[in-house]
Amino acid sequence: MNITALVVAAGRGTRAGDGIPKQYRALYGAPVLRHTLRALLANGDITAVVTVIHPDDLSLYQNAAAPLGDPRLQAPVMGGNSRSQSVANGLAACDGDVVLIHDGARPLLPPDALTRLVARMQTAKAAFLAVPVNDALWHGNGDQADRAQSRENLWRAQTPQAFDLNLIRAAHANSPEPMADDVAVARAAGIAVEIVMGDENNLKITRAADFALAEKIMGQNMDVRTGNGFDVHKFGPGDQVTLNGVSIPHSHGLVGHSDADVGMHAITDAIFGALAEGDIGQWFPPSDPQWKGAASDIFLRKAIERAGARGFTITHLDCTLVCEHPKIGPHAAAMRAALAEITGLDPDRISVKATTSEQLGFTGRGEGIAALATATLVKI
Ligand code: MG
Image 1 (cartoon, rainbow, N blue to C red):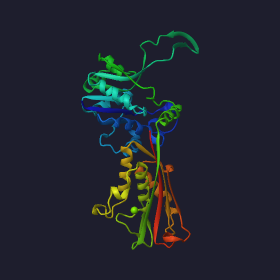
Image 2: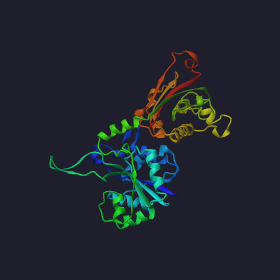
Image 3: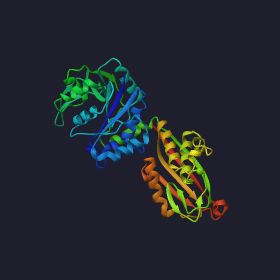
Image 4: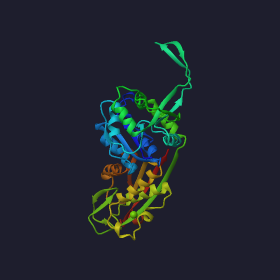
């Protein structure tokens, strides 16, 4: 069984308040959509993930998805004028036997619920996650209670909703709009749809208040880690130094096997430290000639990739450069921007600062530059 996940993320999310669409707003330092995609990618049975986005949101999508670095992420598909049209556009780009249609704004999909749904599709043509209605239900007349509604056999639909790909494609092609969801589209086409127990934590972010609730749920299983990194490179011949990805003219260069970006090396080691996965020298041995003169973003990207593969989100970086010269202050904003570009973090979650060592020691004598870094990683 070949399974593609189709994530619908083309909506504008107006009920969640002003600002960028809700699926791109931050939950614990990462866009909602990144959490959603990660939850799907955590299931090894899913072979591809296609996301339907609004044409205005391409850079927001890249920012959300690229740090995951997962080859199963396919190029995004542009949405249509309605959710239904967006799903139809996405289905056209899907491959395989089964498609899991999922809301981009459901970032908390529990692995167990997803596993139950996938298992059911071994035999079902269509199935979806749902939870029983537990509250008493009332018809209202304005603000007056009118009559009670039995909750027997009532379910609240969640996503993913899973379908035989060919069947749901045909159902959408013949679907009269509008439909409540894709189960409704399937039922209208006469497809039998099975109910699989969902999870109350599989929250759909709809209102502004849902962000706080989502963070509370996520916090229940949170794994927060910090790592530190330290690095030194000495001055040698040259006319510029590269610090945190920014080239700065100077009377000397820094000596090293790579581009000697001491700041980025310390940050990379801080991330490896938080993961307890060794250090930069183990991942990129100085004895290996292929790293000679390498731009250090290769090292940082590897550490980010490892964090993503382990399910961690980098939420904060702090780097201190220790030197008398060059002056760091005028370049700190450019360094934060360069690090933001590589990591996908907001610049306000990246700190670059500097100190001298009061002319003491090797940094004080101008023999080299030292860097310290702290990285904070969160796994939800
Ligand atoms: Mg180094």
